[in-house]
Image (tube, rainbow, N blue to C red; front, side, top):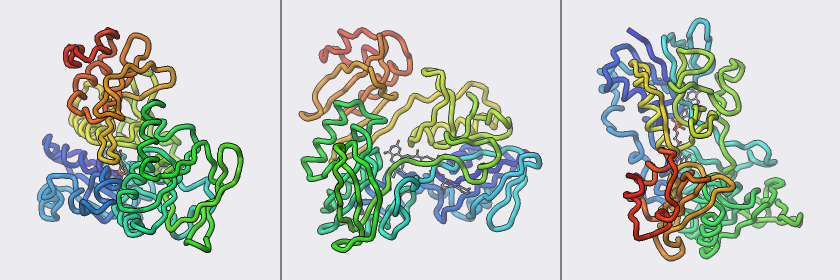
Length: 414
Ligand code: FAD
């Protein structure tokens, strides 16, 4: 029987194991991950787990019984809690940090990403946090609250979600962002400006186009962050804690010298197989997958991609032929507002808007020529299906009808 080894027991890795069993795969499965927990979902790490409205057990990939030791035994799944140190591609053998080796016929790499720390002097001081794991979230939770000051370096999704959660816990928050807008990778400028205003209204100081020169031990507070604003004027921010949220590195250590993975993760084909080794599959944040819309390979760092690409990989291992396609979709929750993004906004997109986020629910539809390139929904999740059809379909849209709020979006998607 085919032996499958899965490296990374996070969202995607855990789901590959579950789907393989559900699809009737009979061979042994080794699921190797360096976290102590059963596989879990990460979105709440910056939201409900951070602010204390959820506890860690609630994040486990369901059904939770799947991960009980006797259930895993019965299913022939070895969940091995250690790091993978090396791959011998010729022998198809993994060397584990605990000294063991695992031989396999098919390998699935689902190692996610590691928060970046490089480029910021002082990043390894006590009190400087990153956020990827349950432990990271709980450690951050402990230092937030009334009277505490947090400096967030990097105004991307995770940075701004943490800012919102920290404010709701009574923390004073400052954000340092190098670019011109917060969350610029997933929001068009107008929506980003509106959201920045929501943060500002709650007292979040935002330094845009600003540089972080370093972090040092402080006198007033544990740390001081040294920066430079857009005019080049230096500033100092006292902080009890600093969050570094400047993106992730997706090159798995154990593949560093193999040529299989580069700075953009593992380049795979439409069947999620390494373009170098047909026995190696990748799923989740680490997989750099062909995107028919742009003709390039892209990585999607989203919950839904982890969810769906893992199922696709299990199906490919079981003989599926039809390629994997995923329309990018992500969401964020900040200050009680739900923002969903379909597709990837690009410079030059022309916005057609229904409603205004400042007043309530809104849809910002981004035209790319005559097609709908991407879309942002604010408190309008129920329209998602229709807009996703339009973005994924790639056909021309009737701009007049798109802009006309009396025409239901579901009719445009027909
Ligand atoms: P992971 O879930 O990170 O799993 C990778 C696992 O591999 C980890 O357990 C890691 O420790 C392990 N590993 C790595 N290297 C090795 C090794 N050499 N040996 C053994 N094990 C190893 N997405 C959304 O769509 N919406 C959201 O609101 C959202 N919020 C998020 C908030 C936070 C704070 C974070 C961190 C992510 C968020 N995401 C969100 C993104 C989403 O959680 C990820 O896209 C998803 O977790 C990717 O799954 P994965 O399996 O690829 O990686």
